[in-house]
Amino acid sequence: MALTSFLSGQRRHFVDLALRLVEDNKFISFTAAFSDEGLMNLSRLAQVVKDESPIDWNAANQFIEGKKVHIVTTDFETGEAHYLSPQRENWIRSVLASSSLPLVTRGRLKLRNRWMFDGGYSDPIPLKKAIEDGCANILVIRTRPRSVRVEQDTLDLIVSYIYRDNQALASLFQTWHTRYNQVVDLLEKEKELNQSWSEIAPLHELKSDGYRISKEDVLDDYHHGLERALEWIDQNLEKLYNQDKT
Image 1 (cartoon, helix red, strand yellow):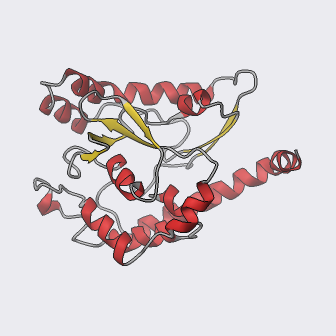
Image 2 (cartoon, helix red, strand yellow; image 1 turned 45 degrees about the horizontal axis):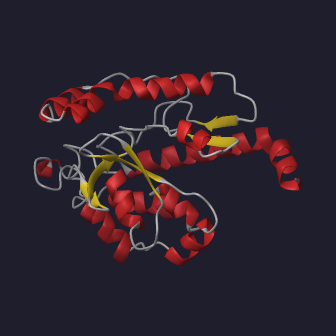
Image 3 (spheres, one colour; image 1 turned 90 degrees about the vertical axis):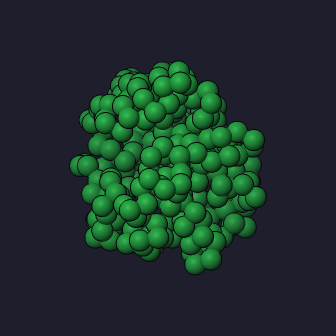
């Protein structure tokens, strides 16, 4: 959703949307955790984007013309990653599919005749996909500090048990943290010939990485992200200038 706002050129759109939703009891409701919509109601997100905080779809589609843009989702049957190229007619639905988490939201969403959910399980940091697509200068924007590795948590164990009849899905939830850590290891390795990547990452764990979030948490993380981005630009200004000249 943040990327969509960025591509549409609407500065602060996503953070303003987050500030609107974070204290909206129609979006986050602990009493609805076991309902069809789950703890976080993605239908409410879609409604707010459509009626109250619209995306400039003309600007977004114009900006991506001639570029490769992918939204990552996970196939609910096979556990494989899907890299969706958003179009105006399915863009927001692709975003919702990539945000669907078992037990947290409605769990899955049908798109292109396939049930899909959060791409973070099948490809949590799609660095290898970018390399395979021929990208040479890659910027990875992180939501965890660079040094942090993740461990399997209780939710992963619960969901892997729930889907124990589907070995592909059960295995996916049991091992996603291993795949995440492998990509983090790759980010720290020396680059291959004709490949370059760098990172913008927080210096500490984000305050809004959870379900009990305040507006102050969102704003603190937003300002920290701006600071980290400006630091990255300052450190890479000469490189960016030379690339622009060529």
